[in-house]
Image 1 (cartoon, one colour):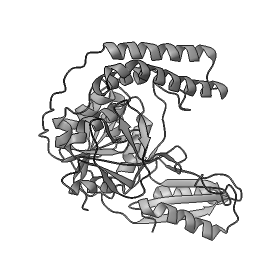
Image 2: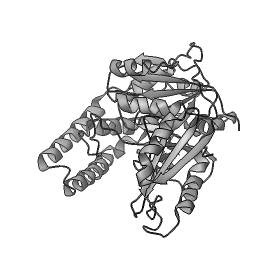
Image 3: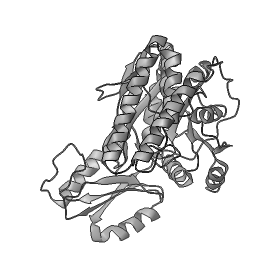
Image 4: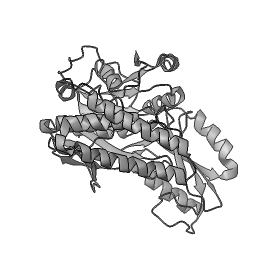
Length: 402
């Protein structure tokens, strides 16, 4: 399949450094024809403007990701529009693989896999969402197409998804009633009748969970208001009214269990727990009362494509022992025109971590004898050369390594 021209939209609010790192990774995409649209608060807009890149910039400082995405859509010139979060970074092959699915004229949406905070374990793979907003995991190992219904469809992860632009515009884009949470699931059910969704496992991003007004950096929730409000709106849009009471009970039990886990870990006290439960109840009430306006089709943008300099680049792996780390990092930061991966190993069994650095290279650290894949053995004997070869082979499906 041939990659389609694309518009990539990044929404950000008060997370300037994360946004800049996200943009840095996007400049390394091997996709040869895409534009980048940033919708962010004024300070972040000023920061990315200073990067001297051809970007479409939209200042917006409200806590409503759906409204922000629709603003991005209003400037999207390409027939395919992709979304990634500001606290995520894309593998160099992400966009070309995600958009290639749209060479099939039937495809209206696509989604890929998401790696979590350690950069190795999966945070998200594939699932369907039903009319109650519940997820149903799918065992998907290769590219595949899935036809959904208005009651159950593939759930495109918000930090790794793409849509046929005109189909998304035709259903009214994102519903601004969802300020946060379930916004993509709502779109998935509303678009399901238009065509299949592609699941592309090797179209991958790394998602880090930066702090926000809704959660701390350690993922402890600060408010459950928007989760509850969005759940109420979603159920009113898609589920039988008779299911509302049961859905509230399920939501309350699920969030109470999550809060209890944080309390046991010492991350929350009784006062914070009470405040969270109050915010959940308030959000549910407001979500039930919030007007549900019909979603009219959005106008087709007329702005021309503003391509970001991009395209395939060769890769390299710089590997060494822990005492060589500083030299390897300096070498990687100085490398231009290459996709550089640095692997630094200590003589330990420490688990590995993998991340994209703001200077523009990937860094993996851990023990020579420690696990990278958390499903594997916690300790195994191997040589340095063999371990580097294994890690390079693991990365190769998503990134040039030589």
